[in-house]
Image (cartoon, rainbow, N blue to C red):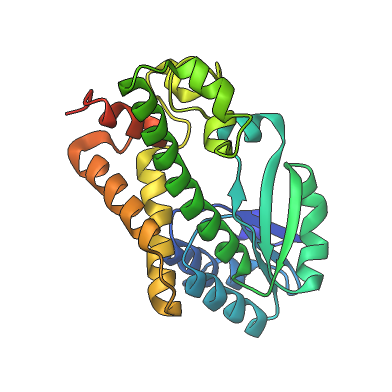
Length: 247
């Protein structure tokens, strides 16, 4: 650890959960014990808002800058260098982080105070999960009523129902050739990952006293898929379940 971080101006991380972030940075012999004072801790994990804020507070107390910078866009955007980063933290931390994030992404936003990057990420992904389920249901309904997927796509993608889940990631095979629906719903962005983000959104909503009825319904749908062994399926695989093609 010391060899990796002792001379670094910026330490970048992406870890599974808040407990890992807190342990890696502030545990015994963690990054904070080895890094030079004034270094920037740039954490790109998607974690609970309160964990991000706790980490930032610990970093500040120890003489470091810290920014939470969760990412959106998936593997295709990562390969293309067009990711979106949502950054929470002091202006000084954002200014130091931006040139690094510019090398990996296309859209870099300062969301405000520490933890606000996580707020933006979980709210966005809650919206995405809800939107994908709605898109799957719409395509399934159209098919059941005799309207083929391509024709429905051509109409709805230019009408008021159009959304990213349809135009960039269509859950019905055919209309968007690069979508996981054309490779039997191999991810992509897996059900288990969407479920993690919906859990985070539900927890944050409970803490904040915010009503997220559709978010909770989406969480239940993805939790059911995961419990039935489909956590590795792309999150657009809800379409496959609606067509009763999953066990």
